Image (cartoon, rainbow, N blue to C red; front, side, top):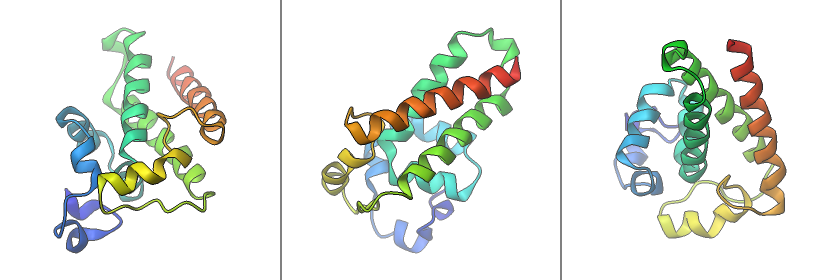
Length: 140
């Protein structure tokens, strides 16, 4: 699925991006299974720590509801909605987002990773939690 990224197969075939190292096997499977939009897929690849955070938060939301009431489509919608909001936030930043290595990603992520507790990210993360709660409520 490397040809689905914004950067294309040519660039992705030349190296293993930080997402390849950071995302667990289960997170990679979830990315392939639930994210079908090339742009949202690219957002998850550019900021893998935040994708992990989004996936964990969505899994927590779904854990509070009976499994038979939760469809695959609902999970896809929640993840895509979160990636869309995260993309809007990333587009406001002046910080470099794309990195060729895990160490380069780690240097820059302090400005945008949902896993960190910086002032710039805290408000964005709270907004995302509220948005996901509303998306889940719309399915009930």
